[in-house]
Length: 120
Image (cartoon, rainbow, N blue to C red; front, side, top):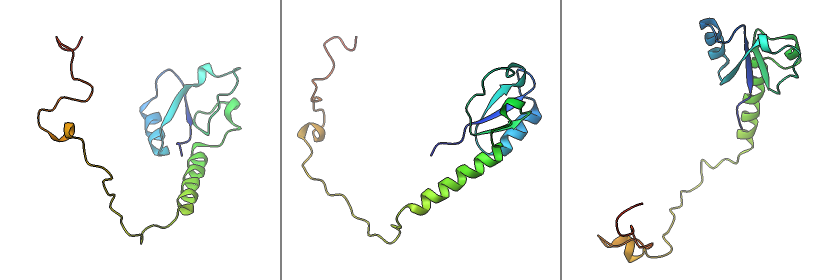
C-alpha cells in the first residue's frame, strides 16, 4: 500500500522551520503547496491536508486522519495474511547442473564477449 498523498500548505514559496517541524510530525512524506497560488483553481486530489489549509481544501481529511486511515488499512491487510510462523523451512533444490561456462575459470561468456577493439 502506498503512503497517503498529503498536501502541506504554506504562505510563501519556501517552508519555514516551523512548517518543516509540523510536516515531520505527520510521519509520512508531504508535498508543499503555496497558498498564494491556490485560489480559484480546482482542488488537487489528495488524501489529506495540513498547514494553512485554504477554503478550497477544507473538504479533504486532515493529514492525521489520512495517516490513521492508511495505518488501519495496513493492519487489516497484515491480519488477512496467513500465519506461516510454524511452517517448516524448505530448501530449494537445484534442478540442473550449472553450465561449464559458469564454472570454468577464464571461460568466455555465452554471448561471445567484447567485440575486437573493446566497447564502442
